[in-house]
Image 1: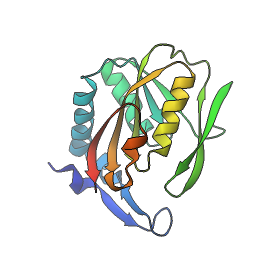
Image 2: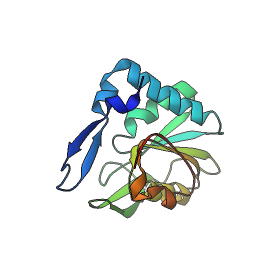
Image 3: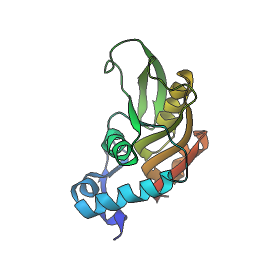
Length: 170
């Protein structure tokens, strides 16, 4: 099974000039989704991971499922005004604008090894921001996993942890 067959290319989304790689068909197909998850788990088993951090919102599609299968915990890295309590926020640049991510300060991440997961690695801004937030609350990101990496944007260079992408495009 070729997982690339389950990615739709959407031109000019979310704005003109952007080619969006849509994972919806992959999520919809039971066998393709199962293969994607198994490839992620195979890579994760090479690391000691205590907690998985999913990035709002498509990272959540994978984080809870993987955490359950690996019998570890999961936390959320959210967009603005989505987390209650005392939070740390950080602004970052996207391929097509800027945004902010936040994490709750009271998450018990001190000296724990984390995996960050998201659907896409483009410019690396989102994942770099997530790494910095995890570090600020005492955790150490040892692995970042994405379903898709856009190699031409060289986002991997911004990431401190090891990076594994299931699919990659030049």
